[in-house]
Image (cartoon, rainbow, N blue to C red):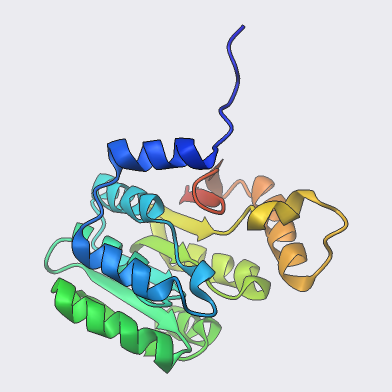
Length: 219
């Protein structure tokens, strides 16, 4: 009888990375510099960054949104997969974190592809909507969890039909499956997960990549 799934142990995760991960020296340095920071756990996993690069290339994406930049790992991965005239509209509120991101963007040679807005993402995305902007190919959401539903709705509005939203941390270290966990972040993610299951404006897939990654394709 075959097993329906494989439990991802640390040795198995190490093997997976050894035979599939193509992280270069720059991304490794960025990841290692970020890891000791007080909020270093917010950084995406390297295999997730590589997976997102593949998604961008499959989509043929040219215009993307990023909600939550942190130190820039995800934006470098996406920017490298975009054509030279491709663009990321990146939203964050931290000058400290994004100054590190800018340093690595320059070194990676992708700074010209990234427009950074230092303001609450809800405000930035609403300004894009109000200006009539739209037609984005891809959006990555990885920011404050209590606003996830708002970010999802705004990004869905800004995406073209066939565009893709990727939402990080949807398993939230397993807390979403533990009903004793009722903190605001866990509740917000749990509610969004339930909401998206019933949202037939999108095609949906939740993957156990990193801390959980939901992909939603706008119909």
